Amino acid sequence: MVRNAPRAFFTGTGRKLFGWRPLRPWISYDATRVIGARLGQHMRVLEFGSGTSTIWFAERCAEIVSIESDPDWFHRVAAMLAGRRLDNVRLRLATDPACYATLAPADIDDGFDLVLIDGEVRHRCVVAALSLLRPGGAIYLDNADRGQPRRLGEAEPAVLTGHTPMARRILLAFADAVGARTEWFTDFAPTQFFVGTGLLVTLPNDRAPPANTVPGAPLPAFSAQPEDEFAYMGQVLAALTGAERPTAPCA
Image (cartoon, rainbow, N blue to C red):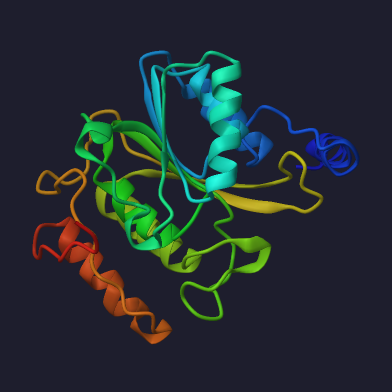
C-alpha cells in the first residue's frame, strides 16, 4: 500500500493543478494490477460509472458496456472514446436511479467476465451483476468500506450514492453461497490523497451463478427505509435462488 502513495500524490497533484486525468481505473493500484493480469482480449466487461477506466478496459478486452448517470460526463467520455477511435464500447446514459442497473438484453448478450461497480445505487448494481457473470467471472466493488447514507438515495461521503454496506453484504453472502474467492484491497488509488478499500469476488472457472437465476432479472423494489435493509437482502437472495421473482422497478 505505502509503495503506491507517491503515485497517488503525483496524480492527485496533477489533477488539482492541471486537470490531468490518468488513463486507468481510479481504483486501488493493486486491484488494477490483479484485474489487468486476468483480463484477456476475448473478455466482456461491464462497468457502472464511466471514465478513464472505460478507455483502459476498451484497450484490453473484446467489448465493454459502460453505464453513466451524469449527462455532461457521459459526453466527455464519449468524446475521449471517439478521439481514440475505440469502437468496442457500448456507452449508455442512465439518469434514472430506478433503472440505472437495468441493462437492455442486447447489452447483456451472454454475460460478462468482469463487472466493475464504481457508480450509482451500488446495492442494485451488485444484485444485477450477480446473474450476469460468466463462469470464472468477477465483480469488483469499489469503496466497499463506505458507510450507509443518511437516507437511501442521499449522497454518501465522496458523493457516492446507493447503500454500500448492503452491496457489500449481498456480495459476500453470494460469494459464500457459491464458493467464490474474495480478495480485499486497501490501498491508494490514482488522484486520491486517501486510502480506500475495494472488494473483488471471483467465481471458480467451472462455476456459473446459480442455474435458476435469470440474466438481467428484474430487481426487488426497495423501500427507502434503512430498517428494511435485511428484509430487502432476504428478497434479493430469494430472487437469486428462484424462490421468488420480484417486480421490475422499470419497464
